[in-house]
Length: 151
Image (cartoon, rainbow, N blue to C red; front, top):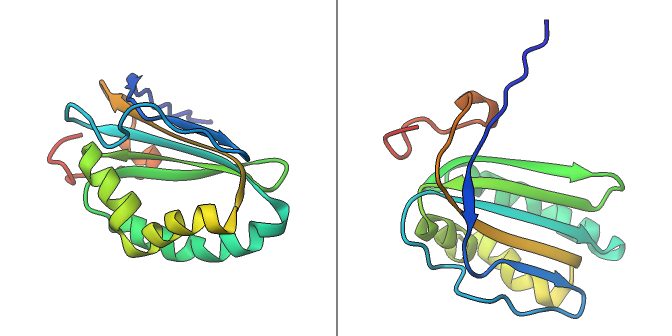
């Protein structure tokens, strides 16, 4: 027997979503602003082949820091074929927790600061969504039970 677990997270886009292709585009709105409540962060990027190894060397340090990040409720990474297309989905207690990790956590903050200098990405997407509800089996995505006092 196969059991299929599905998560459904109704959401609405927050200002400041960014999709940047090599030349770069400026996001509209403030990605740090949220009226409050849970936030889903979606990232997706296509790595430049010549920069991929340098990028991948940083992943273990950032992943270790993410695991203990205050306010993190769930997170997972994903990859696509061909190699070099990847993304992450993370669910946070609120926008402030997501921003603290993204910009102030030393390993991740250093990676963010290095991105325009090292030009890892041929294209990138960073988007935040206000979570309206969460339904499904919490263990499927590694839900950190009790991090916000509720599921």
